[in-house]
Image (cartoon, rainbow, N blue to C red; front, side, top):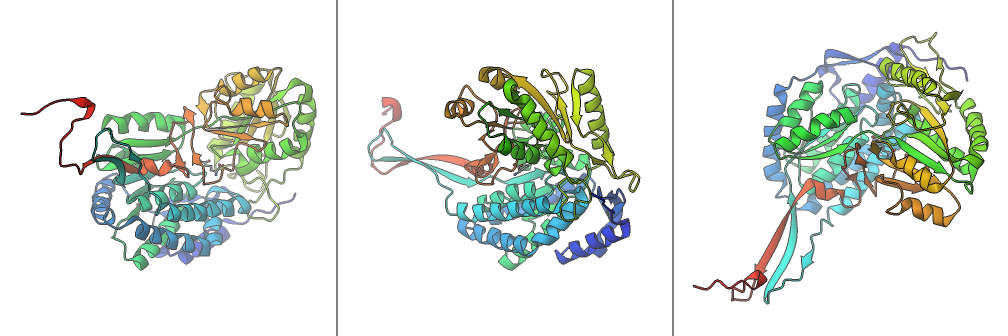
Length: 510
Ligand code: UN1
């Protein structure tokens, strides 16, 4: 595929016009720190950053908003999120454009990211009428035992470059219906996407007559994130990023008895069994491994394939990898866009070298494209590495499109390999044997938070709880009952008997 990459002026102008259409005051961006588009490696925007002192003010404002918002009935809070969903739908293409420009996602995946935001708004609107507590049988006559769920407080959201908008929306849509204001520290690589999301929410909030400062965005460096993490006024810190980041965030939030929700690294595998439909498996694997240029936390990084079908699968994968259209993510037909920056590319190179040193063979990809046209843009060919065992480099998450393929003989061995990495986000099995599928999803199977059958590891729907175990951090966000993380539970015992029987039969009468 021959690609001509667009020039910096063109991309910068598109970014500016698009952000403006979403309601961003583009003349007030300040010009402080210049961002780069991964598409051509050229300058894209210049946005002022706040300093950590801004966190205090923001949290205080959010606290004021909380006092008002927590008294608004949940279904009325849902009406605001409904409006946000409508605005996101109206600006779906705009937000997708900003995502492509700032982080290099292909158009279809950028649109998918915005769809995920619209979906979570729909979900949250329904949820706003379903923040159920339980009633529990009391052991005492004339008593009722129940639980109620109340708004928790200010939620701090720290998000990463690879889902620069959707992760904010998962947290914000749920937090808002739960009665919590949000202070957001977005990725420094994607400030315009963040400001556009914030502008749309501000518009919905103004139309709704919601309290001021329900949602604030703080464009800043790591110090701003740290200030948010340490602030005693932040009840919940929801942080998405590397395991290294989570290792710092978790203990700091715990030290002040705050709540944290951590979505950290993944090292997601597919087990491919002898009975698998290899055509389907190939498609599922290629989307999960090469999609988003290998930069999803759910990206498939390992294939554990039965020795009998290993050669056949590798042949199919090699063929598919050779045909992957790599290039300008905004051009029709492209399936693999650029890596986010040179650091990501250097990490990919280093991992490939380590893999070869550790006995691996590079069977497809691994090269760089378009460097002559754009030396500061990093288009990497997704790489396929065959390796005999799970060496240290395979157990490590490299945030780039490298897929390690390893053989297995028994399913127990395959499950052990799947589980023998420090991360525990997503996993899948390709099989037509029901017993194998059931074992993989059972208590003795995959130890991940996401365990799929006959689909890849990435591309989860918003209706399920999203997150994983071990070094992935243990948090759950998005659907199912993840909302409970954003609320506080009160257990209520109500006595309507006129007597005072004590629980556990205790006698205490004076
Ligand atoms: C992430 O990479 O941080 O399951 C989130 C998926 C997407 C979310 C990924 N729905 O791949």
